[in-house]
Image 1 (cartoon, one colour):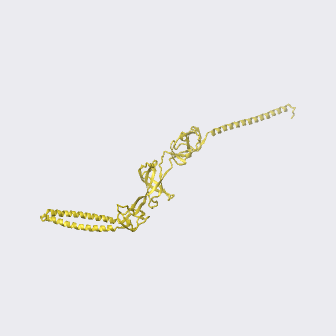
Image 2 (cartoon, one colour):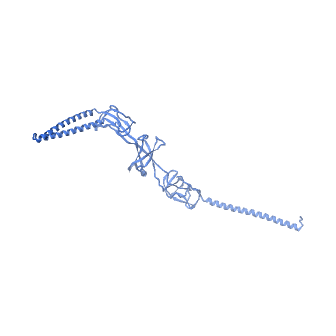
Image 3 (cartoon, one colour):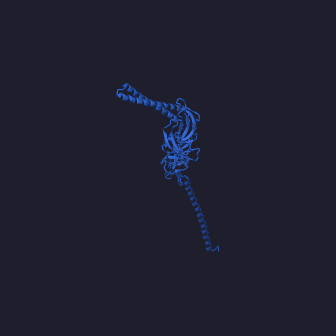
Amino acid sequence: MNPDDPKDSGRQTRTGALVLGGVVLALAVVVGFEIYSRAAAETELASATQEAAVPVVTVIHPASGAPDEQLILPGSTQAFIDTPIYARTSGYLKKWYFDIGAAVKQGDLLAEIETPEVDDQLRQARADLATAEANLKLAGLTADRNIALFKTDSVSKQDRDNAVGALDADKAIVQSRQADVGRLEQLQSYEKVFAPFDGVVTARNTDIGALIDAGASSPTRELFHMTAVKTLRVFVAVPEIYARIAKTGAKVGLTFEEYPGESFTGTVARNSNTIDTNSRTLNVEIDVDNPKGEIMPGAYGFVHFTLPQDARNVTVPANTLLFRAEGLQVGVVRDGKAQLVAVKIGRDYGDRVEITSGLDANDQVILDPSDSLVSDTPVQVQAPKKAKG
């Protein structure tokens, strides 16, 4: 290539221009790409900033109804029948047949009493009755004879009337002697002391040879004490606010510390139907079957009442609640925005609360809402969770 050749000089000029143009184009591409990258980054940053400005919330649906909740109250256990056994006649204890802890049946002989005075009085009363019956027989013969003789005018009317009057008097005497014999026979029958019902002897307060005084003018001492334990009564004081759960016939659970992990079933038998003005409680009796005698009278137990449910109420986790000056509120998501809703709570279950008004099962309730949350705040919702029932 000759530099003095005009043709070669023109080629060099064109080549330089092409190279310069390529460089300029490359620089333009680089500059344009840089400008585009910066613009895209700014757009992405603006979008990310806008998205970051919208809080992301986790929501749950309220659970319908409320879990079974129990009201546990202490109860005092008593025997269905608890009675002392007294002597009905005076004397000396001849023999006893059952001691404390013995299970007896109705009609079992518990003890025998010797009553020598009553025995003597009975023998005398029977002799007096025999005398009165003999006199009555004689008076009857005399009256019949005088009535017959009066018809033939062999005796006077007065004699006849005296004979009839003597007969009536002797009849009354016989009736009196019969009543006296019956009374003493009844007293003699009390020499044997029988069990009045099926139960357990819880006390024996006498022994052989002990003086038994059944007189009404002197204090008497019980011979035995018996309880019926096949069915027990459990008395519990139910607070006035829960009085409606003590419905007759309702089933309740009972637990006792001496039987850990074991539960018994009782039935509400009756209640006092009046609120005690001092304790503001209702006295309720619960009957519980005790065929094996496992539960002892006097035992301290706990009665488990199941509180009624309201199907219209829902429950939500406790961490959905907001305590504001306006009152208790929860945040719900509606149309992409958070709304604060006033609610009223019922029972508190610890990690959950019962909502009696303000929510239904279809609402999206915000979990762990921010204290700064206000109504109409745009929010982004994560996948909803179902509250545990």
